[in-house]
Length: 217
Image 1 (tube, rainbow, N blue to C red):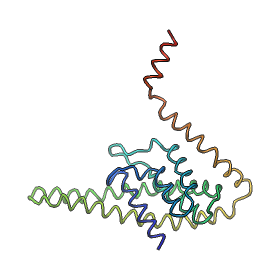
Image 2: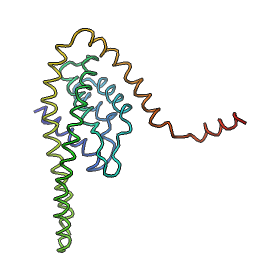
Image 3: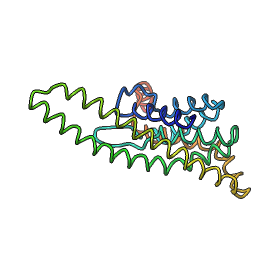
C-alpha cells in the first residue's frame, strides 16, 4: 500500500513539470525532503535533493524539449535509501547512481506518452470544427488523467524493480567502493556548486560589472 501511495505522489509531483501548475514542487529541492520526511529521514532527502538540483540545474522544460525527469531521479533515490538503509550515506549515493538510468527510461516513456496525446488533440480539434467546444475541457482532463495513470505505473515499476536491484547491489559491494561512496557524499555538493557556476557563467551582475570597470580605469 505504501508503494502505491508513493507512486501516486511521485506522479502528481512529476505532473508539475509540464502538465499542470509548474508550482516548482517537482524540483529536487522540494520532492527530496518531502519523501525523506515521509520516510523519517529528511536529512538524506534534503542532501540528495541539493545534489540533484545543482548538478542538473539546467534541465528545465523549454518549448517542445522533454527534460530529464529529476523528480523521478530524486524521489526514487530517496525512497530506496531511506527504506532499505536509513541513515547510510553510502547507500544514498549509490541509490542516486542507480536512479539515473531509470530517470532516462522514464523520459522515453514520457515522450511516447506525449505522442499519444496528439490523438487526443486531433479529437479535440475535430470536435471544435463541429461546434463541440466542450471537448476542449475533456481533452485537457483526459490528457492529465492518462499522464497520472502512466506516471503512477512507471513510478511503481521503478520503485519496486529498481529497489530490489539497489538493495542487492549495495549488499555485495567491495569495501573500497563503500569508502568511495562515503567520500562522494561530501564531494558531490562541491561538484554541484561548480556546475551551478558553470551554467551561469555568462550572467553578468550589474553591480560587480560596474565595480570591475572602475578598477580597470
